[in-house]
Length: 163
Image (cartoon, rainbow, N blue to C red):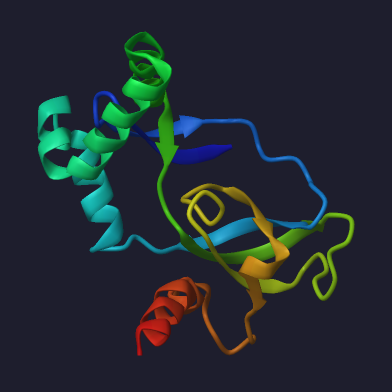
């Protein structure tokens, strides 16, 4: 399946071929119909990962402090290894999507294959063809609501929480 990933080391964004997620207990498998690209949060995250190491350090001094504390507690080489490992990873982009349920894991209640749903959550509702989302981060979508509109559910929930 296709998924949008960003390389943390280079900042490059790509459409990658990755294995489809497996059905898991407490999760809903969703075939994505629409996903939301956040002009604020996502743009900032992509921009952050495109900065060099020094640029990231200057923009996120709290992470530098965290790394310094870890180096004092666990040693410099261990900390360097953890930082390098993080930089080698690619990160999935997206946190709000909508689609059709294609499978439900054990212990999932209230959802069935064929249901129209909106999904939320960084690392769950990403820009991918198929999503594996905890059931508490899914909500049914009425027929009169388009998938494009439903993809805004997470953004709307965040705004309402702020109010």
